Figure 1: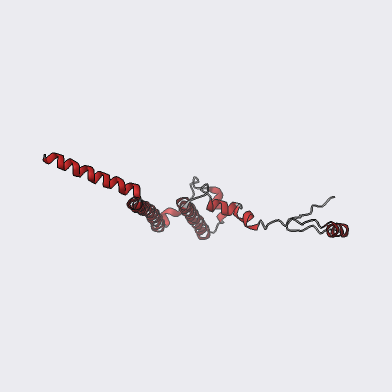
Figure 2: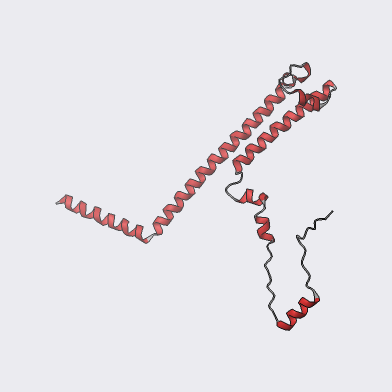
Length: 176
């Protein structure tokens, strides 16, 4: 049976004849650049974060909220299993559609569930408020930069002067 050899990270050693040939003929050796940074940048983890195709801040926060909900469900299943003396695996296998007396944990812990749902709603509202505030801040900053650029722009200044002169001539003609 043939075994596979992983050559990644290994360098090929030259034979004695190759070294002698290089010394006699003075062939230049091509040094390849270190491509580690490029490999790291093209990895799926960094590509997801840095490219526009990956999850953004809102998607990541929604994903985190969903993960928190699933953890809460798992905690509730384990707690019910420990109280009833069963196993969490059995509770998960039965699923929410089974009508069993030991699976009704919502009525026992309704205040905890309500608190958790309120916390999730507050976090979601906070996320939306932050996103809206960021949009307002960015648009205000862009308008300030545009106004500053227009004030510095010589063409815009010339147009303003032309408009002022035009208004001045109109005012003079209206007096006559």
